[in-house]
Image (cartoon, rainbow, N blue to C red; front, top):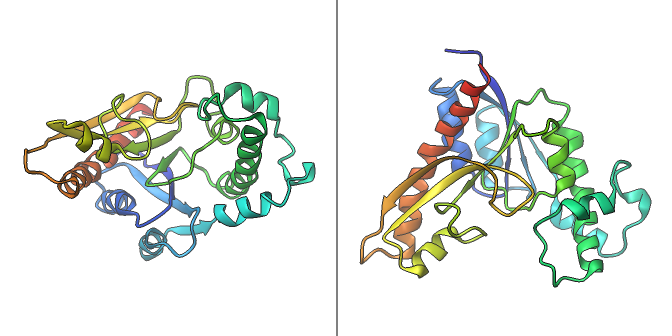
Length: 240
């Protein structure tokens, strides 16, 4: 086995993809160790999975932070290195018909939460960050503090569709409603867009005429659990 890379994970829920990665690490089938698992939601199953594997965990409660920000955001609440104009110039996630005030609130409130994540995460010696069902949008503020070298991507995500088809939050649902006969999942790097970063790997499955949306999701999850560890290994190999 080659030298193992240090992987951080962010989750929002049950953590089944996290479990697949934990299992691959523990079985030494990939050259990686998970060094922390963070969540934007307290009390979720994924945190229990990590703790059972003796992985350090933490929570940054996004809902609480956003509710607090709705009462008003002072300049002193924002990270010292936050530059709204710079972040606005890079962001590709908020539609153009949204007001400037709404965009500013979105970017500021997320930066408050993201700084709390970064303050914890950057204390670790991390080679790669994996989003294993992390349901929060990452802004350029966060991305630029992980992807510190131009053209070098260090944040990996899994998406429930064969990108570039069906980006967004409901990939399997969109696949089903469109009537596709092939579904799949994609692991890709994170950039400033919505599911637009470089593709690392994909797995496909057949959709039968009598398959329900639940059937598609079940087939997709099996492929996700295979694909994510493989893509982490591909990243580890790239560092040799």
